[in-house]
Length: 210
Image 1 (spheres, one colour):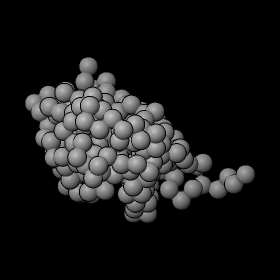
Image 2: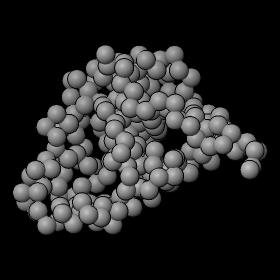
Image 3: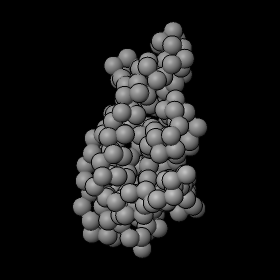
């Protein structure tokens, strides 16, 4: 067994999903449509910002979609830190299905939805992305964070899909298993790199909303 410390020992990842949007309440697939936070979503972001105000954060990255970007800006205020945009943190693209509910998708294209459900690794919504493509771009973010920020605390503000995929990659799970993670609006997950690799310290924590 290799007992030598991993080079990224001490790196701490704070993973945050954006606050609520109107499309979240109606269960419409948002994908990469630029849907803004609603009033409750901003309140959720303020609550999380208060919770994280005493945290030592070195750098903040966020998806450039407005719901994640605004959430990150609210969290960043007490720390007086800039937010760095990274489009690779965007949600999985659902192409022509963006704006539809799952039932509307089934109603419009039942055969396509059935094929998509059978192999989301390699099948995509019309004009959208596969899980394999999502995993590739999220892996790029993770590789850059590991290379640039050893020993630091890094806040990533993104989306349910991209963050669940990031957890799959950290835990060396297949991308097809990303549905096994739940990620609520402004949920906080914490990953700490220890001697043997990444350890999950918190997952889908929303107690700041209560």
